[in-house]
Image 1 (tube, rainbow, N blue to C red):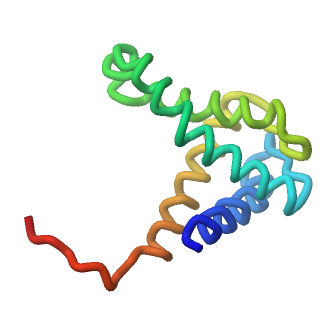
Image 2 (cartoon, rainbow, N blue to C red; image 1 turned 135 degrees about the vertical axis):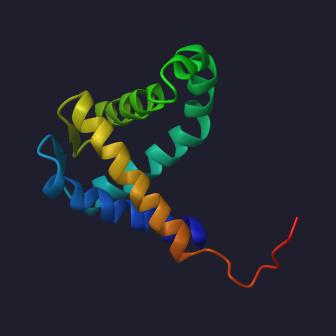
Length: 120
């Protein structure tokens, strides 16, 4: 159930994104849900490998190259999801930051408050 809530929250943020960024087009709910699904899948599978492979440049740029990786992954998803378009790398980087806010919000909304917390 938590995964579905996160998917819906990210889809809502994707639907709001064209109002915030001029280079982003999302044609409807279905495109937003498919895009959120593929972004989540790619961020779980491909992103860690890319971060590991680009570790030297990420260290040199003090972690800012991770923004470029996130933007490139958003552009990659926009290349094969119909109804989702991102105009360029800067729009993709902005969108990845916007989606990070949405992911953070979904994590806050569905955090398990009843779980015992360790003091260690």
